[in-house]
Image (cartoon, rainbow, N blue to C red):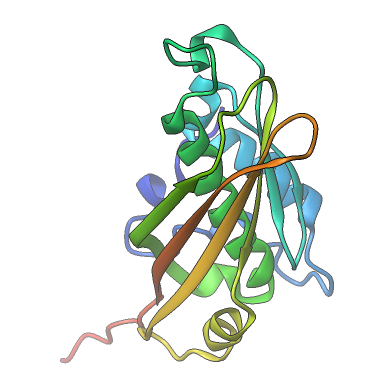
Length: 181
């Protein structure tokens, strides 16, 4: 398992490992595989990124008893984790052509609306707002960008069981400091 890249290079992009320098087309399969390796808590819980592209990302919560609550339904914390990882992957997919220039992304705020209990395998399908992704793609060095995301939660039958909305802040890598003589 790889370590979190932000721990490896704290002065650079937390997302550099997702980039494929010189690639004309983003390697979404590389992003998907890597995302399953670099989030230690996600790996510990067993959530899995199953899809990533420029429009969305999908994360699955396995049907396991230890991920349920006392009622036998999927715990809200597991659902939030899947939505959080799916949202971050949707951001990486949407901004893949400049992902190595993103220093960090954090959730500034979130709102959850659970509509019914989830049973069995649950999928989080996340997107980020196109306008915000375009602002990231056009951002200058050191610039901060606010953008929104959304993850719809679906049970194994495909019924929507909840929605989690995210307000993100991203910062681009700053210009290198040139030492003065």
